[in-house]
Length: 393
Image (cartoon, rainbow, N blue to C red; front, side):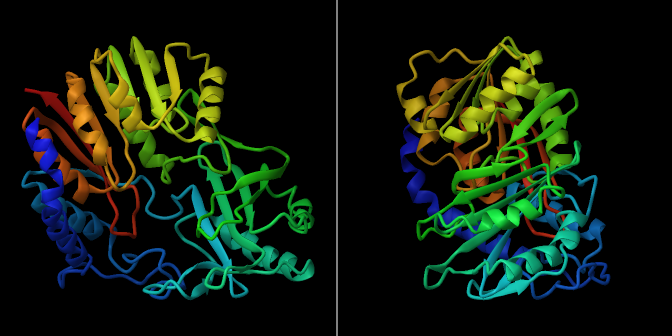
């Protein structure tokens, strides 16, 4: 366990692997090329691999991961190569509504379509522009921190086919309500939230909603309510595949850390004796309790707490399995406390394999890799999701 205190000395390892990752973005000469599907490709920063045949996108990611982890890794393709994202955050700045231009933070591409989200984007964008013009909706200058409408966030529950739009404004002026009223027939949920801080984020305090405050998604027989600020895996098709795999491996008494709105906990609950789920975000906790209630799940306890604080103060260490789904930064200072739990198995879902490789160096002192799978959560981009099952030695 002493080696855990030396993690900061391995930042050089992280830097080296990150450099390799950036090099991996360069497409090899033998890659199969094709015409990009989206008219904005090459300018928009939303994706970078549309001009590469999907089989070679998978090959590039597989080869990089196998080099990174020095082992053979199976990669699971996304069931859908395009129109797979269930959420898109459109910035409204400089009178343009879209995504930031590739390679710069200071310019925005005025989108006409997006081939990653849903056909709804192409349908609704012209109407949004007309409504903004009609009602004098001022865009937000995020460089000077001036203006009104900051973000338009579109969500699409893929399996239930429900749609949500969230308007994020910089102040409480109610003019956006006129736009919302005009869209009530097009969306199952319309939300107005406010972010008055200088932080450039689409999260905000919910001010008002129309039709409903949430949409509902369904994974097999489990229902999930999703709010404006709720974290939900962006590719529902791949997320379902991952949750099925986790359910195959988790039994007995389970601890689910970084639990969000209890999506994994709810999905695996009938396979477990009990699940203790920990999440710090208050809205996620509220929706988590709702999700457990609507699915009649009684063996999951949902706790609102910072993961590090929870682990540091945890007295009972009696868990068979620990599920980890941390943010891109990884476990950070919670790492050594995870090891202190000494579970039979750790199921780690990583959205940043480079960071996980650094952590795995220490995990392997006490655990062996039982299974490692890559899931292509984000086709047309270099990003990859990694699921690793660790068994105690």
